[in-house]
Image (cartoon, rainbow, N blue to C red; front, top):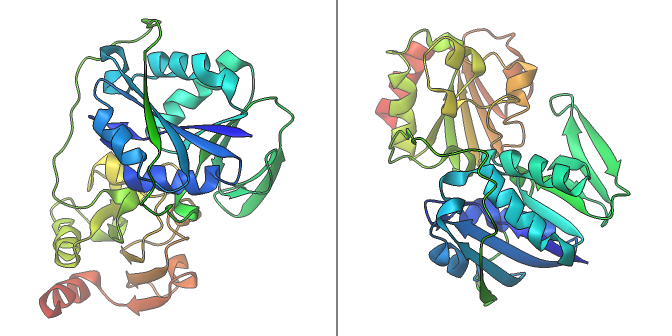
Amino acid sequence: MAVLLLGEVTDGHLSVDATAKAVTAAMKLGDVTVLCAGAKAADAAAEAAKISGVKKVLCAEDGSLGHRLAEPTAALIVSLAGDYSHIAAPATTDAKNVLPRVAALLDVMVISDVSGVVDADTFERPIYAGNAIQTVKSSDAKKVVSIRTSTFDPAEMGGAASVENISAVANPGLSEWVEDKVAGSDRPELTSAGIVVSGGRGVGSKDDFHLIEKLADKLGAAVGASRAAVDSGYAPNDWQVGQTGKVVAPSLYVAIGISGAIQHLAGMKDSKVIVAINKDEEAPIFQIADYGLVADLFTAVPELIEKL
């Protein structure tokens, strides 16, 4: 068995955390080859070669592979697919864009958000907002899977895989890059942060959401938000944690003014320690919290910031 794993490359840099966690899962399926593709990918490929368990790294540098466009990346993967029994990627926004196209071109199904590997044909994945685990057995000759990285530990660094440069294939030209609008931040990336502080509808306004940000900055944490907070305009969409947002599993998750709807719990219930602050003692969030404080957040959070 051999696995082609799409490395998470953005602007020439490898997301080591996401890729290393995907490597841990992929090693259960066979020998792992990591594909680093982009307008610039050499540095990312060199970093991927250091991940223990990686047998080989393929580096594809071409202008058509920049800006995370799905079509040329999918075409490249399909051209390489003949040598591999499994094609995998971390379940990020990039992979969720690329893998369905790969699967369609190969005429196979996608097995998404894999949280457990039973054997080479059988996988576990969460359904019903994480309330049940589905076991999927595929008879496809090639398996296309996205890996939910929050459920796997990262592979250690210290490997020394070989790096091979390869050429891009013809660009299908079905989409084009117009522009990126990226908000700069010194905070950790939400999906890989060790600590996440999230605010919900109870925060009350966009101005008051700065309280959440102040606490996060004190803790060196990433900032998250519930869908209710995002829909109300308190926080940007890329901060959303939950079934329709990002899935996180930090060492510490602090939920402030979040009731704990099932859709939100699906995105953070694998956190190692969960702390909840809410003035409603009946809030569902307290059922999964390791520590719960029934208090007005506008009293508790400023005091917490001061003591920290």
